[in-house]
Length: 357
Image 1 (tube, rainbow, N blue to C red):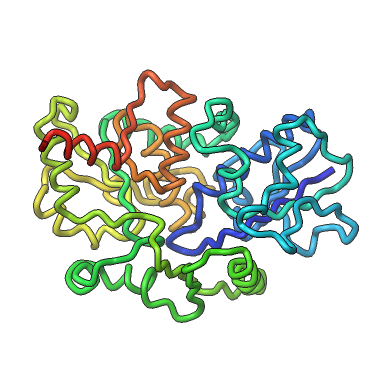
Image 2: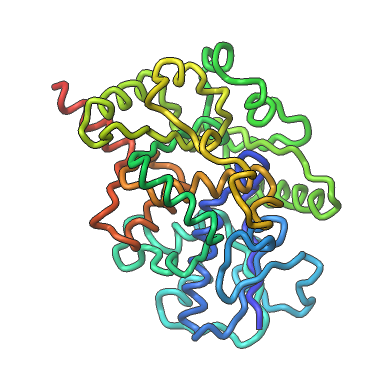
């Protein structure tokens, strides 16, 4: 028996919503555990190419194409007539009240932030415990872990999808490569003034239709209210200066994990030539011997290099809004919460303001 899972997150080259999708998988892997793992989880191939390729191994899980869903499949939590507030209502009894899934093929359509509606943020009873069941490519995990031990400190910077970019940044800093990816999309722009199911579902269908025809759309989500705060350079420079003075670094470098291109941070490297490094400076495909890594799509490989460095670095500073770094933080908690230290930007900036009083 299979559970076919489709989420309405629109991933694209530059932001494949990797953090969201890892949390979505863990959530339904947990549901499967409540049903004695009687089901095979099926993830949409176009959204989980890194599962299909073998880069990430998820137990009791494989990928599917839309035409492979049986016509008589039982649809649990259909999106018809759903709102953002009610989109997981039908699922809740299966997670919280002991209700068992019917023993048949099931199709579940869930919005990208569904896991955060099924389990409240900060819920101490469910801090995504089955993250530990995820197996990453062994060579990639080992080599990023070796780098992470030497780096000690990683900072996650979000300046791509989900941000409102200041005009001065667009005019003076943002590279042409980033503008093409995050600003000047030709095919499809999705305005998320109201990121409701009614708007997202038709757009996701367009993206999937194109991908399955081998003609992936260039897609960009345009936010009138940002998902991720855009922190100015001066904020990061203050962080760098504090870290450089701190005994924490002990001469090691600060790794910048980011979602755009190194060219966007050229002025950072010029200001701190001995202190900053990115994964692109540490790894290339030639760094690996495993064919799975060598044959991986460039942006997917880069995403998981960044994620595994972020996961395995002892000290991290992360944005509050990112599920990508949120996943890394959860992994650290379950791996060794006493060893790893993670601080979010809001807490850090609040502490700075209090010191200045």
